[in-house]
Amino acid sequence: METKLLKPNEESINLACELLKKGEVVAVPTETVYGLAGDATNGNAIKKIFEAKGRPADNPLIVHIASIEMLDGIVSKFNADAKKLAENFWPGPLTIIMPKGNKVCKETTAGLDSVGVRMPANEIAREIILRSGVPFSAPSANISGKPSPTTAQDVFADMNGKINLIIDGGESDAGVESTVISVLEDTPIILRPGIVTKEDIEKVLNKEIKVAKEVTEGVKADSIVRSPGMKYKHYAPNAKVTIVKGSLENFVKFVELNKKENTLVMCFDGEEKLMPVSAISYGNINDPKSQAHNLFAVLRELDKENAKQVFVRCPETTGVSLAVYNRLIRSAGFNIIEV
Ligand code: TXA
Ligand code: MG
Image 1 (cartoon, rainbow, N blue to C red):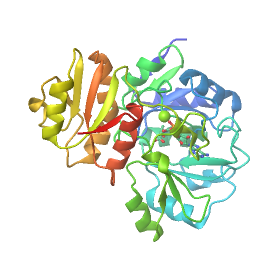
Image 2: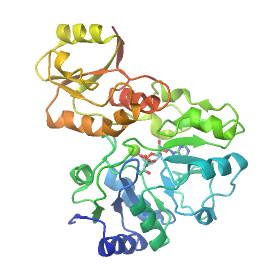
Image 3: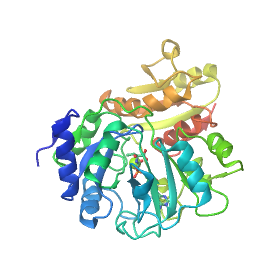
Image 4: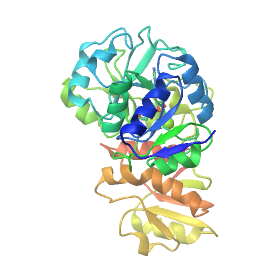
């Protein structure tokens, strides 16, 4: 199959809409990362997404809508917490897990009776949903296990020959996937951290919420977790990645002692010149949004640099930093040390 890579315009957007309506798969930009979109109501379309990604069949997809009216049939219940969250954070990078409606095919939810829904803010994604009328399911448009794509070129590297069309909407804004929150129980719980933080959500709901322990801990492959996506090794470059907690001074000493051929460092802006090996910054130490924005691009860069061993300066674990930390520990296969 030839994979077209097209800039967004009248013609390419219409083509994307036609393909979606026919049950084909299209890669679209969103404000978080690029998504691999297929009609959420069409089991055959969704099977193609799982195939293209090589995604385990027990890992459910998120449904993307462009208006509140579209929730009809997508969810069977839109409770008070969900309404407040939607009013405050949609369109935007927040996915809300709610009871599944009967329009959504079982392939989308991997057989679960709940469904994750979000309304993306990206204008191209919105336009495609509105024009086609298709609520689309979309996981990140990477091969399962690889870093999520933040450019159309990243998508092309993983999906060339596997899908018909990629719409090139430029670099993703956020750089990490949406915050996933379940409102199935009285106390909402964050299953995946993102740019919308626990603190942001608590302010809006006016109550304390929980964060699933899997967000900051490793999960065994055979365990049952609330968010199946959290049990898989993720975002992993070819190199062995180690997160190194501790002061900058101790970090530098540690690298000096443990460096080999093809060792690289992921550090913060301005620290590169202090490192005894080649170093790539993934953002400003005081600006977690910049770290989130750059993270996946830098993880992909490691492969291009042919890194074999990578030491990473550890981010904070509060606010937006929690999203960065959560992705990093997965890319490191939970390999974290303290110096
Ligand atoms: O920002 C995003 O959310 C991107 C863009 C494309 O919108 N999409 C994305 O999808 O990150 P994906 O498939 O890579 O991640 C979906 C996550 C997985 O961890 C999955 O397990 C969880 O959401 N999820 C989806 N439906 C769920 C459900 N019903 N219950 C619990 N977790 C669910
Ligand atoms: Mg993903």
